[in-house]
Image 1: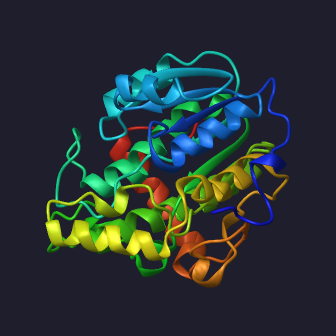
Image 2 (image 1 turned 90 degrees about the vertical axis):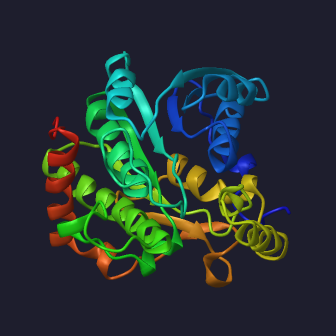
Length: 294
């Protein structure tokens, strides 16, 4: 469906700019990468699977490059960052997993917090000296039901609940941008930290499950409620290209923030908790072995 208001036609000229989009081989990441490349940016598709990345890049106009990074493996994150040279205008932390069964990353983190937050956190810390404009984190309206448990971030003592674990990881994304913006401002940096969420977008995340009933329910819900991946990418593109203040959070402006033209949206009280954001940052540095670079 065509989304009224802001669209890819409203993207400013991106020539001369370099953008990294994680998870760019599918879903809203692929849509965002294609739109940015079409607007003239040099787009690096940061993906787990090089073949899928190259297949996605082949459908895109302009200047694209595929590089491998697995956010569920800190060694891969470090290798990606170590190989980066030159300025990076925009880092879009888009890659993620959604409501998966209990699993562990290569470093022993719970899969959702490890991929959606800790991997992206480490990548940002390591690439930040190169970033010239902004960092965009893709969160979710599911953050409103999330609760960050600093004493058991990796679900080692609690009974695992995949929905709660997803909500925790998406709340962590917003707390990350909150503290990142505070630190950037304190350092006198002009780099901005922003967040976005796609609303309900048909990307396949809702239908990845080992439970057939859940897959069928996800497909049915997508058919009724979801907007396209292209429309779901618009809040990310809005946050990545528009002149917005640091700390902004973009999402669809329609009913329930499920669909519609992107606008600035609100966040939960927990997502505005500066003390919690600082404590999560400290814990994330400890778990990932990274340090503030500015």
